[in-house]
Image (tube, rainbow, N blue to C red):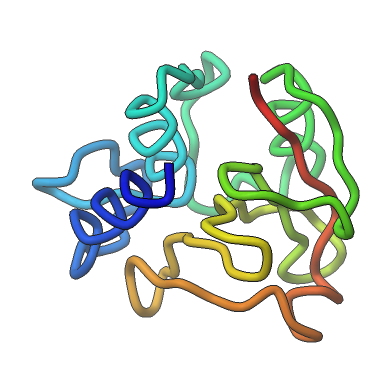
Length: 138
């Protein structure tokens, strides 16, 4: 599995962040990344919740992302149990969950950053403070 993970990661290098992006050709956002990445492992995620996703959606409905995450199924896991392919989610500001990524080993996760595009970050103190939960699929 680690070889497949590394091969996939190399496909995302230099992919830009695009709000509501769902293709490697045009760019992806953090949800688009999760959808495309998991699809390679036979895990299918919904692209949206049936409503338009505006850039400032979290201002009018701060619970929207976590509601969506909870409908995905999966088994909740703690920060101490994380393994590759676990979905991790974070509150970036105002304790509102607005960001997700995928663990690629026991201490790093891949995600899309609005500023830098595709990136790999350690689940260190900075991200640990923002961590709000994780799900394991399969």
